[in-house]
Length: 88
Image (cartoon, rainbow, N blue to C red):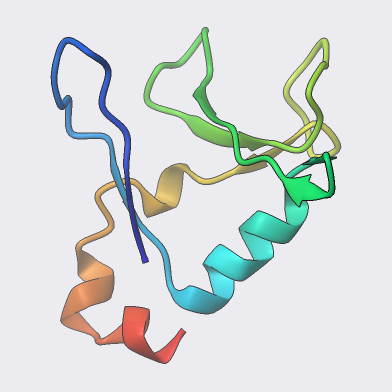
């Protein structure tokens, strides 16, 4: 599964590659609003290289309760080499 983020100013290498099982787990960790999971991927303000899925819509700090770390999936082209995306 590929997820691409791009601001109006243009693509800035924010491409995420997820094995299907991991993507399913990540979606299930997202908050539910209106009966659907709402996926919010955000950068950490203090460290723009770190990306998180918000588990909560409002929080005061980044921790395991409020966010799920997804930075390891950013530009994870190594997953393609091993065929891990298809296997999930």
